[in-house]
Image (tube, rainbow, N blue to C red; front, side, top):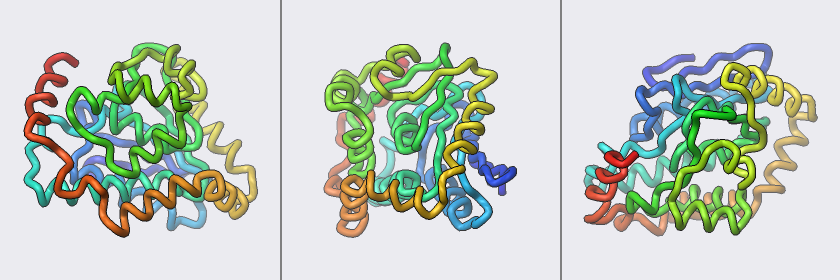
Length: 251
């Protein structure tokens, strides 16, 4: 399966989903919808026993498209919130094993996508990892917040969320952001091997146990999707455009 910005390659029961929106695999509304369709297709394929999520080029994902999303009108912002929550919930709730093959920078929303996977294999050098939303003035959608709180130690979450700094691979490993580091050339191969290893577990049992582990976070996400994110009609502020532009300049 292929689209303009997302491809799915199915081989021997392992689906590799590749984000391909140059130059940074940045997230806008169209990208979210394409990635979500890819996840739905993977989930509906009974032959798929595990999934690898990766990025094309030197970026896993730089997060929200800060050139476009801060300019969205209110209706677009609300739709973006809803779609983001649905996408993150779908990835976090995938009943099959999911492995993030982190080929490069994973920033902000890109890091959230990585955290939503069951296992995270990242390049050992040349990539940055961080939750920089606070620098851009972008509050966390409910599903993103739930993933951060569920997947990171409270002290690590506090440091990442409130300081908004990017970190190298060694620090990311120490903070529990990633599970293992590999040479760039080995990341995808190792991620596939880990996916096959996790897929050796009984499929139905894996999905049910995963739901048990993530139950509270998934319930919070489901509530936000059903009732509407608390940030609806009040997500991005007047200062967000200027702050986002500053983040783009400073890197």
